[in-house]
Length: 171
Image (tube, rainbow, N blue to C red):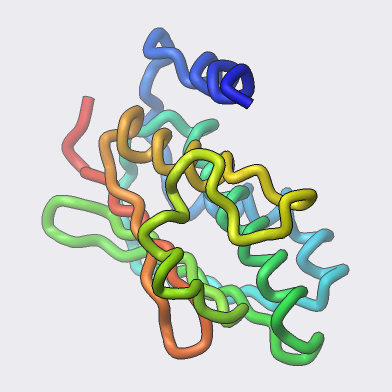
């Protein structure tokens, strides 16, 4: 398992260059990659986007984070919701210093005792055969160590909301 983490570390070596991108376009690309899988699982997604400026990020890594959060949402929705009530809502907004991306789903809450652990390596709320505990750990590493943002999660009334905050003035 530690070899897997080393492989992921190689995925985002510092020799790569920041790209100025539109976060909405990266999100739409991520959703396109996942759209058939979400559709096959009867999951509806909504996007609420306020106009935001372009931002400098490592786009491949950010897409990887989006896909990982969407994949986890899909699994929670399939496990915890009937087919008529599966929803992912993504919002992107701008603050004075940052762009904030909220990726929420109604697939049930994370137990309070597990909420602070979900970004730990090898921790999974899934059965051992279906979860390695690497995805959210790597997502947090990518956002916080490589992109210099923050990644957090909170429980909502019917599910969870992952919040990615990216600094606008970078590079």
